[in-house]
Length: 131
Image 1 (cartoon, rainbow, N blue to C red):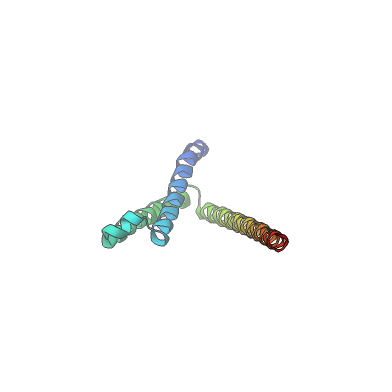
Image 2: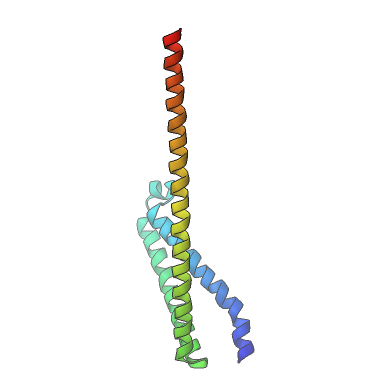
């Protein structure tokens, strides 16, 4: 049984990555749809496609839960959920740090650009006043 679990770990990892990719793609499609999707309409088709994919993922997750609970026991499913929650928390914290870093970089660049513009304007006024 241990070997079965180990051999399934790669498959489950790929499935988890596919789920995460779908969630990301769904968020991007809803928040910032491509310009060609906006022009052609087709909102109903997109909604149906997202719904069908979401239902399929829910069914697969339920099958996985039933298999883990049946073969390894319900406590193992709870352990998987705890690990998943911890990973999501870590990923969310990492994303917040990344966004904060980019915000700081943008603020510094804007401040430096403003400083250069003001120094240039001051130098221009001095040059005009002397000339």
